[in-house]
Amino acid sequence: MGSLAGKSPANTYKSLLKVADETNGVSGTLSTVEDGEGTSSSLSVSQGQIMIYPNSDTIRTLRVRNASGTDLLVVDTSNSLVKVGTSQVSATTQLLTFNAYRIVPASAGTHYLVGLPTGEYVSHNVEIQIGTGTDPDTSKDAGSSTQYFTNFIFPVPYNITIDACKALISSHQDTDITVNTHLMSYDMVADGTTNDGNLSNGTVLADGQATAVDRNVIKTTDLTVQSSSVTSGKIIACCVENETNTDDITIQVQVKYHIA
Image (spheres, rainbow, N blue to C red):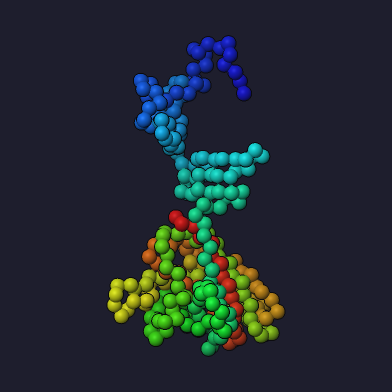
């Protein structure tokens, strides 16, 4: 790093930093930090505040590194993210888990809802069907299963972004089966009527397929994210389908997301 010792200010003023308010200097009001010829930086200061306000957004508007040069904190103004730790995940990253023990399909090719953890042991989850198409149905009337349906849906409290989705799948028979997994979002009626709990406007958030599933293996499937943004007020549900036969399924699905 160079030194200003012995150099005239007339030759070095461009490398000097000052605040834009040349009358009051640093005061109670934010003032942009400029170089000696008035070029603005992304930094503003006052007696009680520091603000970083870039002229253009970048993925590394602010960085804090350790002594070895590894990023520990990064503010990404291009994508509106704050990333933390050596893994550089979003600071608002959360994990959502669905699981089910021994879903017993009534017929091959039927989608069933996968439950949320309840903290209690049950012999198996109650089977709730949600369609026989390529994807789960885009609407669902809970009907007489309303008392069970509550533990199968996750209400979204903030706008979120789905980052990844992973399924661990096994069966309880020796026959190899093909299993399809879908992560869905829906609108849910909640207006105080007898329709409360009914679902509509279903959207596939992520999907994936596991082949050669049987009781001797745990198949790991990284689902493909199809629609990452989910707005506040939606609900998220997970569905699984035994495409081959009616052998029962045990499944755990982990959803990585961050608050947008």
